[in-house]
Length: 176
Image 1 (cartoon, rainbow, N blue to C red):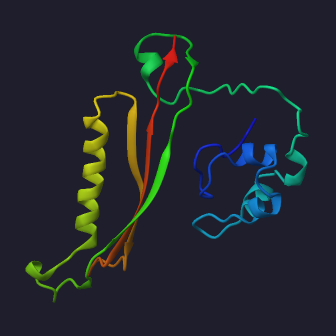
Image 2 (image 1 turned 60 degrees about the horizontal axis):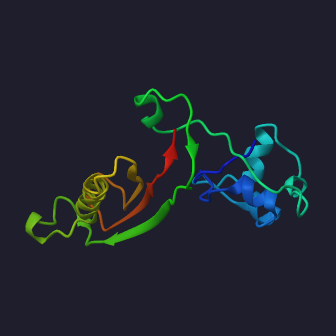
Protein backbone atom coordinates (compact mmCIF):
# COMPACT_ATOMS: atom_id res chain seq x y z
CA UNK A 1 0.00 0.00 0.00
CA UNK A 2 1.25 3.47 -0.84
CA UNK A 3 0.83 6.61 1.17
CA UNK A 4 0.39 10.26 0.31
CA UNK A 5 -0.33 9.70 -3.36
CA UNK A 6 -2.69 12.65 -3.62
CA UNK A 7 -1.49 16.12 -2.66
CA UNK A 8 -0.98 15.88 1.04
CA UNK A 9 -0.30 17.85 4.15
CA UNK A 10 3.37 17.83 3.09
CA UNK A 11 2.67 19.62 -0.20
CA UNK A 12 3.67 16.89 -2.63
CA UNK A 13 1.73 14.15 -4.36
CA UNK A 14 2.84 10.61 -5.18
CA UNK A 15 5.22 10.58 -2.22
CA UNK A 16 5.04 6.83 -1.68
CA UNK A 17 5.41 6.10 -5.40
CA UNK A 18 8.35 8.49 -5.71
CA UNK A 19 10.16 6.80 -2.85
CA UNK A 20 9.40 3.31 -4.12
CA UNK A 21 10.62 4.19 -7.62
CA UNK A 22 13.68 5.98 -6.28
CA UNK A 23 12.84 9.30 -7.91
CA UNK A 24 12.86 11.14 -4.58
CA UNK A 25 15.63 11.16 -2.03
CA UNK A 26 14.57 9.62 1.29
CA UNK A 27 16.30 12.32 3.36
CA UNK A 28 14.52 15.03 1.36
CA UNK A 29 11.18 13.28 1.96
CA UNK A 30 11.79 12.91 5.70
CA UNK A 31 12.61 16.63 5.88
CA UNK A 32 9.30 17.74 4.29
CA UNK A 33 7.20 19.76 6.73
CA UNK A 34 3.50 20.40 7.10
CA UNK A 35 1.83 23.74 7.85
CA UNK A 36 2.59 23.25 11.56
CA UNK A 37 6.31 22.78 10.74
CA UNK A 38 6.21 19.09 11.71
CA UNK A 39 8.49 16.94 9.58
CA UNK A 40 7.34 13.83 7.76
CA UNK A 41 9.89 11.86 9.80
CA UNK A 42 8.43 13.10 13.09
CA UNK A 43 4.83 12.50 12.01
CA UNK A 44 5.42 8.99 10.68
CA UNK A 45 7.56 8.03 13.71
CA UNK A 46 4.81 9.20 16.07
CA UNK A 47 2.30 7.11 14.07
CA UNK A 48 4.48 4.02 14.47
CA UNK A 49 6.15 4.02 11.05
CA UNK A 50 9.77 4.47 12.03
CA UNK A 51 11.41 2.37 9.32
CA UNK A 52 14.03 3.78 6.99
CA UNK A 53 12.57 5.35 3.86
CA UNK A 54 15.61 4.18 1.92
CA UNK A 55 14.33 0.63 2.36
CA UNK A 56 11.09 1.14 0.39
CA UNK A 57 12.87 1.61 -2.93
CA UNK A 58 12.34 -1.34 -5.26
CA UNK A 59 15.17 -2.59 -7.47
CA UNK A 60 15.17 -1.65 -11.13
CA UNK A 61 13.05 -4.07 -13.22
CA UNK A 62 11.34 -5.38 -10.07
CA UNK A 63 7.96 -5.01 -11.76
CA UNK A 64 6.72 -4.73 -15.34
CA UNK A 65 3.28 -3.28 -14.57
CA UNK A 66 1.44 -1.74 -11.69
CA UNK A 67 -2.20 -2.05 -10.68
CA UNK A 68 -3.61 0.40 -8.20
CA UNK A 69 -6.83 -0.64 -6.51
CA UNK A 70 -8.64 2.52 -5.64
CA UNK A 71 -11.90 3.35 -3.99
CA UNK A 72 -13.76 5.59 -6.39
CA UNK A 73 -13.80 9.05 -4.92
CA UNK A 74 -16.62 10.33 -7.08
CA UNK A 75 -20.25 9.28 -7.28
CA UNK A 76 -20.43 8.27 -10.96
CA UNK A 77 -20.26 4.48 -10.62
CA UNK A 78 -22.63 4.48 -7.68
CA UNK A 79 -25.04 6.82 -9.45
CA UNK A 80 -25.11 4.51 -12.48
CA UNK A 81 -25.35 1.34 -10.28
CA UNK A 82 -22.13 -0.04 -11.79
CA UNK A 83 -20.20 -2.28 -9.37
CA UNK A 84 -16.74 -1.82 -10.91
CA UNK A 85 -15.05 0.42 -13.44
CA UNK A 86 -11.81 0.20 -15.38
CA UNK A 87 -9.82 3.37 -15.80
CA UNK A 88 -8.31 3.64 -19.27
CA UNK A 89 -6.78 7.07 -18.92
CA UNK A 90 -5.13 8.73 -15.98
CA UNK A 91 -6.50 11.92 -14.51
CA UNK A 92 -4.57 15.07 -15.22
CA UNK A 93 -4.60 17.12 -12.04
CA UNK A 94 -3.14 20.59 -12.06
CA UNK A 95 -2.25 22.63 -9.00
CA UNK A 96 -1.73 26.36 -8.90
CA UNK A 97 -0.64 28.86 -6.29
CA UNK A 98 -2.17 32.28 -6.80
CA UNK A 99 -1.11 35.43 -4.99
CA UNK A 100 -3.36 38.48 -5.00
CA UNK A 101 -1.97 41.82 -3.87
CA UNK A 102 -4.23 44.60 -2.64
CA UNK A 103 -3.83 47.60 -0.38
CA UNK A 104 -4.39 47.02 3.30
CA UNK A 105 -5.06 49.27 6.18
CA UNK A 106 -7.12 49.74 9.31
CA UNK A 107 -10.71 48.74 8.59
CA UNK A 108 -12.14 51.71 10.45
CA UNK A 109 -9.97 54.31 8.75
CA UNK A 110 -9.84 53.11 5.15
CA UNK A 111 -12.90 54.34 3.30
CA UNK A 112 -14.81 51.80 1.22
CA UNK A 113 -14.24 53.80 -1.97
CA UNK A 114 -10.47 53.76 -1.38
CA UNK A 115 -10.12 50.05 -0.65
CA UNK A 116 -8.32 47.51 -2.76
CA UNK A 117 -9.29 44.52 -0.63
CA UNK A 118 -7.31 41.46 -1.69
CA UNK A 119 -9.83 39.13 -0.04
CA UNK A 120 -12.72 40.53 -2.10
CA UNK A 121 -10.67 39.94 -5.25
CA UNK A 122 -9.86 36.40 -4.04
CA UNK A 123 -13.57 35.73 -3.49
CA UNK A 124 -14.23 36.67 -7.11
CA UNK A 125 -11.43 34.36 -8.27
CA UNK A 126 -12.88 31.48 -6.21
CA UNK A 127 -16.33 32.00 -7.71
CA UNK A 128 -14.79 32.19 -11.21
CA UNK A 129 -13.04 28.85 -10.60
CA UNK A 130 -16.36 27.27 -9.65
CA UNK A 131 -18.12 28.81 -12.64
CA UNK A 132 -15.32 27.73 -14.98
CA UNK A 133 -15.50 24.09 -13.88
CA UNK A 134 -19.29 24.03 -14.14
CA UNK A 135 -19.29 25.72 -17.55
CA UNK A 136 -17.18 22.98 -19.20
CA UNK A 137 -20.29 20.84 -19.41
CA UNK A 138 -18.22 17.83 -18.33
CA UNK A 139 -19.66 16.19 -15.23
CA UNK A 140 -16.22 14.91 -14.26
CA UNK A 141 -14.35 18.22 -14.32
CA UNK A 142 -13.65 19.43 -10.80
CA UNK A 143 -11.93 22.51 -9.43
CA UNK A 144 -11.37 23.54 -5.84
CA UNK A 145 -9.67 26.38 -4.05
CA UNK A 146 -8.82 24.44 -0.92
CA UNK A 147 -6.40 26.78 0.79
CA UNK A 148 -6.76 30.49 1.48
CA UNK A 149 -4.21 32.48 3.48
CA UNK A 150 -5.21 36.05 4.28
CA UNK A 151 -2.69 38.69 5.36
CA UNK A 152 -2.53 40.23 7.87
CA UNK A 153 -5.42 38.08 9.09
CA UNK A 154 -6.93 40.45 11.62
CA UNK A 155 -10.63 41.21 11.99
CA UNK A 156 -10.04 44.99 11.90
CA UNK A 157 -7.61 45.06 8.97
CA UNK A 158 -8.36 45.25 5.25
CA UNK A 159 -6.52 42.31 3.69
CA UNK A 160 -3.43 43.38 1.75
CA UNK A 161 -2.51 39.98 0.33
CA UNK A 162 -4.25 36.65 -0.21
CA UNK A 163 -2.66 33.39 -1.29
CA UNK A 164 -4.84 30.71 -2.84
CA UNK A 165 -4.11 27.11 -3.78
CA UNK A 166 -6.20 25.75 -6.64
CA UNK A 167 -6.61 22.12 -7.66
CA UNK A 168 -8.40 21.20 -10.88
CA UNK A 169 -8.79 17.85 -12.59
CA UNK A 170 -10.70 16.28 -15.40
CA UNK A 171 -11.28 12.56 -15.02
CA UNK A 172 -11.98 10.76 -18.25
CA UNK A 173 -12.66 7.42 -19.89
CA UNK A 174 -13.81 5.17 -17.09
CA UNK A 175 -15.19 2.05 -18.78
CA UNK A 176 -17.82 -0.08 -17.12
